Image (cartoon, rainbow, N blue to C red; front, top):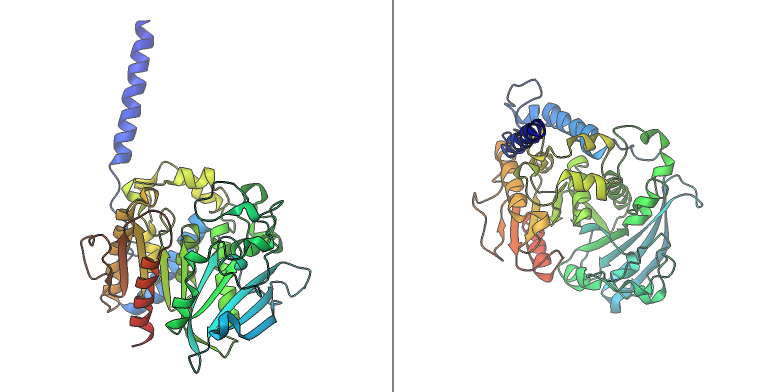
Length: 421
């Protein structure tokens, strides 16, 4: 009995020591230090050497490697209405056939262009959660045909319109409140969106079996596999491919936006594709803007077990090692530098760790400053509902995990500041 007590006590001590060691997080890794240990000294060295190292690090250890632009991809504009939304906009809908085949994987892109602006206009691009038809009640929008979640009790939308995981006509406009199209158009911006499930499924039971993943079997069954967050980011780049062909859009002034898990994708899209001139992260949390090293909020274990399809297999080896990572999300934000990026939090969104999102933006600021911009214009977290805007912007608003009119007001101000100088 005494032996068992001693063994139990020894085990408890070892367990507590392990917890204590994990609590003592390693210093936040410096994005301006090369893999071999020397410091980056010039902007050229950042762009040609360190940035390349970081992209490879995150592709290998977290997001997975992604394929390039499909050689056979085609765009088909199947709808144009020059008097959409009561005459405010021109609506276009574009079918993107990733392998060039009409019976292959297809992504529908919905594009609204403000009619009151002459010449090419800037645009805001973002993926949506519940189909293009969900962002507005416009009867001309094609109903999404990809798989649709239908869980009851969804706090953001009424999904009772979904039958057998397919949308119906009654789903039109169910998520319009998160997409203030009139405000965006009135400020002179085009709005561009596509449904996440057209690109890659978010249903773990279906993972890697629909969307673009079947086109790239060589990127699966490996430790650095093409994860779903990376696939969504890849899809955003394919939308950018189209926008570069549309004369109504100023492709040099395109912002990429995302909320929650799609905010994670927007950050990775901005990091990997410099054609996005501005990046907006709305409560992207763990695997987005927040720092894992704080050990607060959603952690790597939850990301890899509840959402096993989001990141590559290699990321699983870091479960329970959040505070000891050799990398962190401030480095992803740094990869966007010196392009403007906005990070936003919500007071009640504890899982996203608002302070950790702020600290991620703050830690990335050193790279922005190194490259000659102001970065984040404060070193202390701003007051509630107070936006701070430099080359990096940030706010924490009242309320919970959502996209609100307050958020969009700040994003449009930020875009005006950088796109309409």
